[in-house]
Image 1 (cartoon, rainbow, N blue to C red):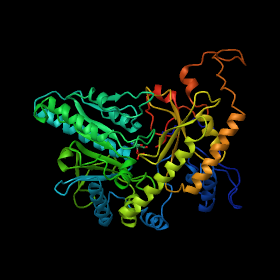
Image 2 (image 1 turned 180 degrees about the vertical axis):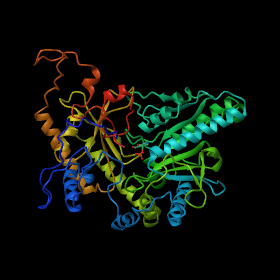
Image 3 (image 1 turned 45 degrees about the vertical axis):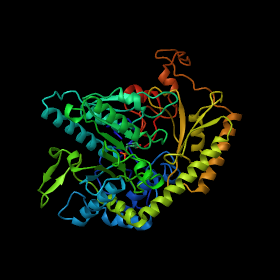
Image 4 (image 1 turned 90 degrees about the vertical axis):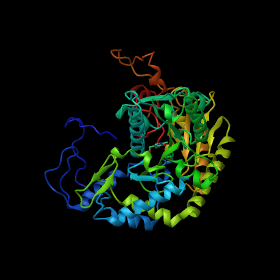
Length: 509
Ligand SMILES: Cc1ncc(COP(=O)(O)O)c(C=O)c1O
């Protein structure tokens, strides 16, 4: 989240009056580095208490990100908080654990033994996606340059439902984003529609294994086949048509291999050259760790790799950041050997069962339609019928009173007329807890039916007399959830174009 410097007198200046320990006699400046030190107990207590205002992570069903790990994992993480993962020479065993994770993931994602895949840990899928996007751009440019073709107008093709990091990649790295429009009944990429946007300047097509908005898997095998047909029709690689697929498996990369191993979405497909996955989502590690894996070393152009020798030894580095904590990498390796295929499969199966049970029960409620019911990611997405006297945003607010954080948001562009409530079933939401959630949902619906909220009052027009109402507030104002400020950092799915930010609350990553 971007934090802003504010005028010094714009906020209460002090964090606390005399409080936190009997010896603490002075207040603490909020936005100015205090002149004096304080004892650690008081500092701890002040911050600890302030953070109590945050939601309870266990009830945060807005996020895909892990909120529970074994005590043993916690211990390993605490033991390694003081290690910088970039200090290869100093911490060679941490490097060895990352190497093993990359090897395990490459095989988990269907790479065959003769393929010399490469990969790296990242801070999350966003960094992984920037790296994968750069590799696609450089690979495309190298091929075009070698063939004496122009290479000044790269584009990338993806569904309108991509997570915001894809728009960031396109903007930061000067690649034209070509979005396949959604429709009010299709919330993921359409294959024919995507192919219509591909041309010789396309650096890659993105397929999402688990849309942030609904949890649905995009048809990656179909994208792969259609792209091959299209490229072949234009003369194939020799004629400059060799478009790869990148799979954004931020969430699904740790779900599909265990629940639907027969589903073809990964390196078993010819055009899938790179895959990202968030270790901190269904990889079951606390934030932030992600991974990007290339099917073969040739898919990662050499000029993107830096040989760094000033830490002792010489090491290949490809990342947007240099220093990063080692503890998440260690925790990922812990999960891999602790859970193995059996453990991940059991957890994913149980999450899927809970999601499907919840979807079935929710689907029985009058006025509620299940948009996605845990058939792909363990996510339940629901909408309300139009004649309900309240919205999914009101329902989300009502659930919040019981501590549940369940976001409501409008779909991405061209389907934004559809607003949904999304429940992410993560480890920690036991069947018992899901039962409590259902009971609270039923109670919230009953309450809202009996006492529908007043329609949101429009803001007074600028310069209008006090008490006057602007009869013509803009449409974006009316569709925005009143309790969420524009740009509020509750999410990451929606894109950050100012128009879009105005229009809706976002899905949370
Ligand atoms: C499909 C998809 N891609 C990318 C991301 C970004 O992932 P991260 O939060 O790990 O950077 C998300 C986050 O929700 C996502 O759902």
